[in-house]
Length: 220
Image (cartoon, rainbow, N blue to C red; front, side):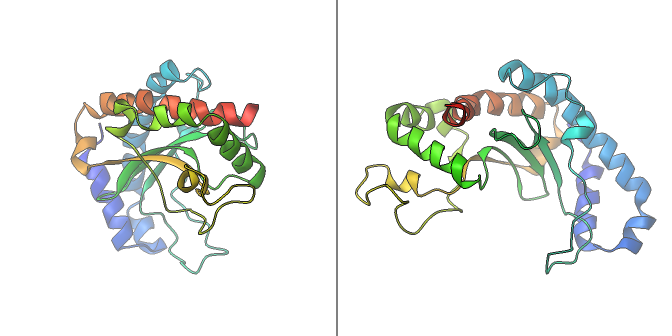
């Protein structure tokens, strides 16, 4: 669990997103960061017990993303993120592998897993795997344990059928996806209860077959 003050701090960052305010509230930032890291430390062994590709020795600090935004190429010049981003990577940087991501953002928190905007070669392999093993993929995403928590994100999607696939393909809507992400929303109050660790552990377990399917698609 995390403290309510941690959520309040990130709300305040969104409202006062400037360097002067942040400097005056640096102590609050450090306290909130420590609080989130404590939650991450509880989650690491839970995920490691489910996904053997994720190391139990992963440092919590490696998972928690920086609050500082890179504004060099962005029209939005706010210097700070309005969320805590936690990325549970299973492979070394540069090696394609589906990941797990937890975002703590008041009113918009979620947990997600999969491939977000993968490069063309990875996307091609995932589509081929879905085409070749359609029934296996459908069994995974239609399983009660999956559907009870997750939905496939439909944000990144082609308007037309991808190259090499007929518009009449029975799973054309799945094949149009440019990202393969399973998402489950989380409520603010969820994070304020000790049960959040068990709740996310259940999510890890429910989404793991989906992650494994994507992983197998890439390594073949």
